[in-house]
Amino acid sequence: MKINDYLNGDVVVFELSGKMIGGPATTYLRGRVQEYLALGKNRIVMDMAGIDRVNSVGLGVLTATNLSVSSQGGQLMLANITNVESLLTMTRLINVFTHSDSRVDAVNRLAGFQPPIAPIL
Image 1 (cartoon, rainbow, N blue to C red):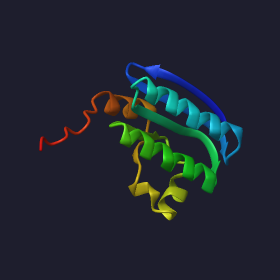
Image 2 (image 1 turned 45 degrees about the vertical axis):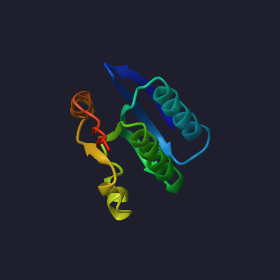
Image 3 (image 1 turned 90 degrees about the horizontal axis):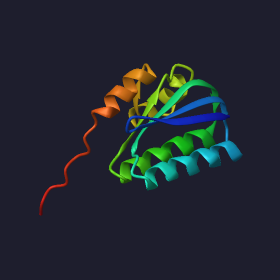
């Protein structure tokens, strides 16, 4: 898997391509996400347009990333899921992830994302 990441305003964008099947690239991806979270960058888009295969390890990385980001008060959004939509649907993870048809739409939606306010007890 190839990974290109950059900031678009306050939104982190990961452009992913190839096979999301484990190995050093998925470890690197998780590490990069953690680095951004440590910097307070918790609005993340994973552009899946270039992904042609995902296995259980890849799904695990996406799920763990989603949990890490949400635990930091942020949001993960998948963009361009056409190539992996049937897998996400079959595993019912389509309901777990927020997703968008385009990277631009995902970035714009996250740019306006406001984390929920915790109730005062």
